[in-house]
Amino acid sequence: MQTDVRQPADITRLPGSGRGPDRPGRRAGRGRLLWSRLNPLSILVLLLFLVFFVLPVLWLVLAATKTDAQLVHNHPLSFGSFSALRANWKGLTAYQDDAIFLWLRNSALYSFLALLITLCVAVPAGYAMAMTEFKGRRTLLMSTLVVMLMPNATLIVPLFLEINAVRLIGSMWSIILPYAFYPFGVYLTYIYFSTALPHELLDAARLDGCSEFGVFRRVALPLAAPVVALVGFFSFVANWTNYFLPYVMLPESDQFPVQVGLGTLLDSVPQFNPTASGLEIQRPELALATLLAITPVLIVFLFSQRFLVAGMLAGATKN
Amino acid sequence: MTAPALKSGRPQAGRAYIRWPGRAGHCFVAAYVVLLVAFGLVPTGYAIYFAFTDAGGSFTGLSNFTAAVSDFRFGSAVAHVALYLLWWLASLVVFVVGLALLLQRMALRGVSRALRFLYYVPGALAGAAGVLVWLFVLDPTVSPVGFLLEALGYHSFGEVIAPGHLPILFTLIAFWTGAGGWIVVMYGALNNISPDVLEAARLDGAGAWQTAWRIQIPLLRKWIVYMVILTFAGGTQLFVEPQLLSQASVGVAGRDYSLNQLAYDFAFQNNDVNTAAAVSVELLVVGLVVAGVFVARSGFFDAD
Image (tube, rainbow over all chains, first blue to last red; front, side):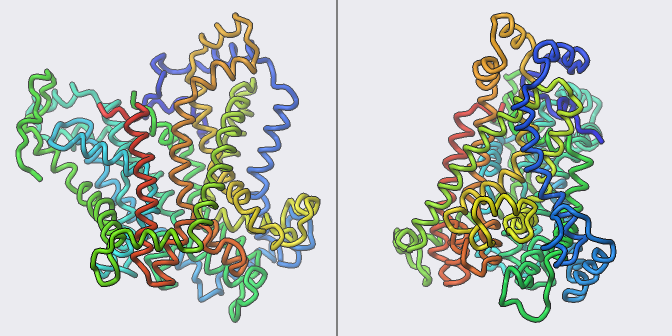
């Protein structure tokens, strides 16, 4: 697993990274001379935060292996049993006939379709803003930056009114299309192309008789793999974890993505909602559902930490 | 869209890499512009239109805004969000910068890397999943830190989520999911500070503390501002945390807690989209002003 983030510069050149690639050996050596070790207080602080960040995740994983009684009476960080895990699985999947799988499938469908559209839209747009000159380019770039910094939740109620006016409420496009509008992705491709792709390369292709579209398709696109991955990961995580938009746009339970589905499950847990009637969900089953809901994002995280961080850094690296 | 724009060609600039000024560029951005209009401009226009009209569509001036502001829930919602932002921003700046400095000072690079990753893992639980985990963590009967909650004198879920605690609790959740990513970012930024500068500081007799305070933190300022801006913008949008908490407490805590919830309730409980739009416009203005000032003043996004 690649977790070294000191060198995302192969994607986007970091500020002040003009020194060229790090030389870890030398740096570490000098670092050791400078700061031989941390004092005990610092180590304690780091460990306390480690507990803070990791403990709830650990607890969640273990909770799915317990019965509700074990959850209350056993040690919070004890392992339950595989039979309890199986029982939780059965209880969870029995809820509204495999509703959890339907929600997961919905989430996957919405996230991937939106991701696909995002890539098809953002990559050419970012390329054009970085490498070509056209009327309104600067305005477009500025509005992209402003919209990017403005959280989209602000627009959800007006968006509902708009989608309602075109009678798309309840359709999956009512969330896929707004997801697909992803200015941050456009900005990332803009940064990528304007720092990583030399104009000379494009000029050479043009001299060889390539059309503008040919230049994009034959020169820029083959070089765009890193930024496609970057935008893809970001867009996927953002789509998968969004709650407010589908909560507003999709009224039917069988259309919910898993994030909204978790809220439904929460309503069916008697300990949290004493008025819950009929189909009950036990707390360990809810924990299991939460684990299932985060698995895809967790996998993306494990395999792409470097990309994700590089993207966050790239938000501020064009100097 | 594809009208030739000869003026923008700027051949005198010496970078004549455009054969047909504009045409190709416009084609490349066309789809994006459509989305920008449909899901950026039109909703904004819609919000403004609804905010200044009544249910019949006639112009009403500022009455929707006064209706929103005079709603008994509005003032407290603003106060809630403000208090939450204060806690969150303060904890983020102090702890993220502090932890990044500590991690960077660590001689054992492998341990430092592992810690950064582990701090980052809860980021995968953004949204509803993270809130659910914290509902458990905050319930003394099942919590892994139940002893801590008991020691603080809270014996039931209801006592833990007393209204006065909510800004801190939401801060905990937000910090838990969000801080790891920023720690990694700050760490990356710290590593970009030239070792020669630190060497010079050492030769001048600066200790670890002085180096951090006088050299590293000032050089991080840009990044801290970037983090604060993005966090501020996101923080005003508080929704899923209070919404799920209010579900879990049967409406005792977290109902109509944030401005977004209030807008949601105006629109979908009271069927009053005009007042809801007024709340949206207010949030929009705050978001636009912050984003605009930042883009214009920071130098972060120098476009060319």
